[in-house]
Amino acid sequence: MALTDPRARRRDHRQDDHRSDRHTTADDDVSKRLLESAATLSFDPSTEIDWDAPLPEGHYGLNPEWSTLYGTRLWDEMTERQRVTLTRHEVCSIMNTGIWFEMILQQMVLRDQYLKNPASAEFQFALTEIADECRHSIMFARACEKMGVPAYRPNKLIAQAGRVFKALAKGELAFGGILVAEEVLDVMQRDWMRGENVLEIVRGTSRIHVVEESRHMKFARQEIRERMRHASPARRRASATGIAVGAYVIVTSMVHPGVYRAAGLDVQRALAEVRANEHRKAMMRTSSRHLMAFLAETGLLTGRSAAVYRRVHML
Ligand SMILES: [Fe+2]
Ligand SMILES: [Fe+2]
Image 1 (cartoon, helix red, strand yellow):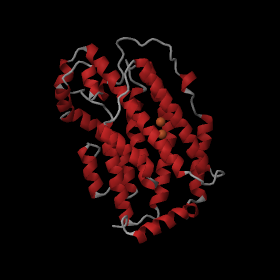
Image 2 (cartoon, rainbow, N blue to C red):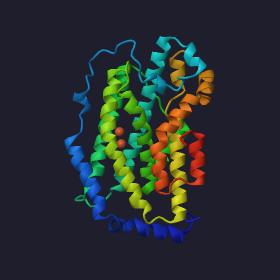
Image 3 (cartoon, rainbow, N blue to C red):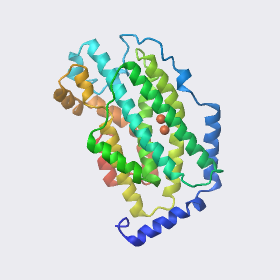
């Protein structure tokens, strides 16, 4: 209702114009600390990763327990060769989703900072984050190229929805979408970077990503808290639903169906086994626990959004 009411829209604009008043010195301190951390611990993947090292044949793309088919009958029937191929395609599909989302994110963060005060720590950290994401996307692109896996892209409808989202989303909706993608990837990558028999190129890129993304997640949480401080219940409910729909799209687009064909599997059977995979559902729930707690704390876990999260086993 509030979104369609022109008076409410005018009120919203006024709130946006005065956002600088609501961004306090304490808020800026968070960004200051993140900037200091970025100055002491950031990586250049072009020199940090050994891009010329050969890929050992038997090494997986990601820890088998993170494979979408792990725990199914089909997984037991697969040869070791097929498992290696599948996990390499799965990790590249997730990295491609990462690139797709990082491009959306960079545009949203840049729009959010348009004509804001360049002297503020918030502005400077936001641009530092964009620079991080730019390096990450190149790093993921090179890793996929090295593994010889072609680009997996979201389907046309989802790709167009992403185009609309990146052009229009703002405030807690934009930062909520960012946080969801970063949190889900973070939990997986913490395992990938330690995974035995996981390709060094995946371990190394995950290590870099986990360190730099922990700052991005802190920034996103801070931005969301600030925006929610004065949000009306109607706006909170609308944003909660929007973020949940974003999460649904991200989670369902992460692994492209083409990965099963690449491993020589029957795609329809593989998709059916993935949908019924209890191990997978448990992994999704565990990796979303922290995110769900934050959304609940900020009032962004409503009845409607919880129903969406349950559908993708994040809750
Ligand atoms: Fe990133
Ligand atoms: Fe990030």
